[in-house]
Length: 330
Ligand code: HEC
Ligand code: HEC
Image (cartoon, rainbow, N blue to C red):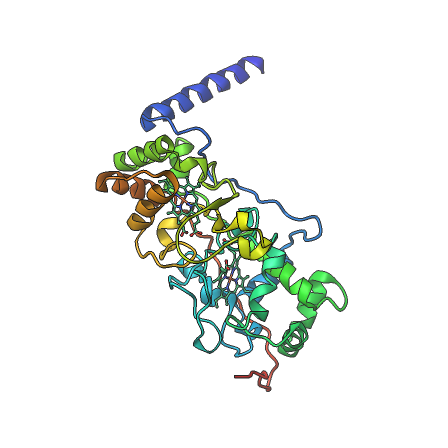
């Protein structure tokens, strides 16, 4: 037994050093594959039935006053959890004030929204239904009545117990579904595990972002340190609007680089169309570094290696009353 174990150890050492040799350059400190698990709050444990209900709610336009807008309208799971709009289209064609970030991997962020005003996914999910420029429901009672009318009652009861259909539980189910929206196995992750390679340009970009200090903020396996940092750009006051403190003026949560190549346009105002331009602006604003075109190209090549695998999500069937229209408003 002991002999076998040491042979196995020797083999493991051999394979991992082999993998290192094929990747040629060392991965900068802190970078690593996407974690496999997210934290789950004690009062919202995961279950298959809850995730399924959350999926129905995420895709169901019955959550909106018009009956036409779902979470998926703005966080489309077919396009990396975004709508690729500068600012999303909501109720009656209104545009909101900020760009829609991706719902993929959101379960990893320290707080939700560009300014972090919702601590948990559970808090966040209560925002859009009542937001007048998003789903525009009059109030939580109206929304709960609509879900009841659609036939959600028994589905909530199954997950949350008797009389389970309420606004809080709606948010809990959606949050449980969002906690499975993770994108593992990006080319960088495979490279970091010694299972694949990335291009020489991407390797140069990987070293460059560590060398000039992008990774002081975009750090660790999530490529964000999950803190608020000042970004002197644009007119949005960011976190100051949440705390009222002048010291928080133009502070925003550090965005992750995970899937960033697929979530254009960029920044909280969605005003920057290309990743090249976003990288150029960031280097200048945050580090006072003027990058050459070639350096920008290398960094972008690296960022593209952070596009992960989107989980396969089958489109759900929603409960609906047979032979009766749902009561939608303009
Ligand atoms: C009309 C478009 C629209 C709809 C509908 C919408 N969202 Fe959003 N979502 C946004 C925008 C815009 C933001 C960023 C707002 C901000 O930061 O101030 C956002 C932010 C988020 C975030 C935070 C992500 C991060 O990185 O901070 C999550 C999670 C999210 N939405 C999930 C949902 C869920 C769940 C629903 C359905 C209940 C939903 N959204 C409906 C546009 C929309
Ligand atoms: C001082 C902290 C800090 C440093 C250093 C920093 N960033 Fe950022 N980064 C941020 C913050 C904060 C945001 C969110 C900006 C916003 O609100 O639009 C962000 C956003 C981004 C975005 C846009 C993400 C999106 O989804 O729109 C990219 C791309 C980016 N950073 C790349 C870089 C690169 C490349 C470097 C190094 C040249 C860098 N950053 C250095 C804090 C930083």
